[in-house]
Image (tube, rainbow, N blue to C red; front, side, top):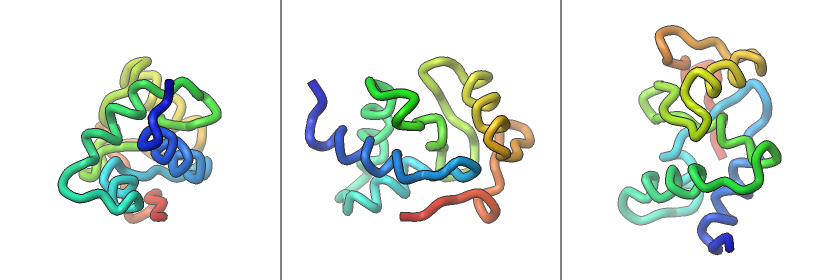
Length: 101
């Protein structure tokens, strides 16, 4: 059963186009979250029952690091590179690839 919060996270995640990434914090801000709910965003994406329709691999840490992924970091990097995102030392240039809501 998907909660209302999780559904909102998934709906936002669906908006991130191929070739772009967003951050847990950006999703949190788009949800007008009070406090640090970006961890809750990460928890919701970790339970994502709608992959690949909800491209949770496009959500990264706010410092540009790729971060975790339920199928492993190597898999996440491979998916992002396939979409044209450049990754150096597990880090993405947010000035170039960040999608904001």
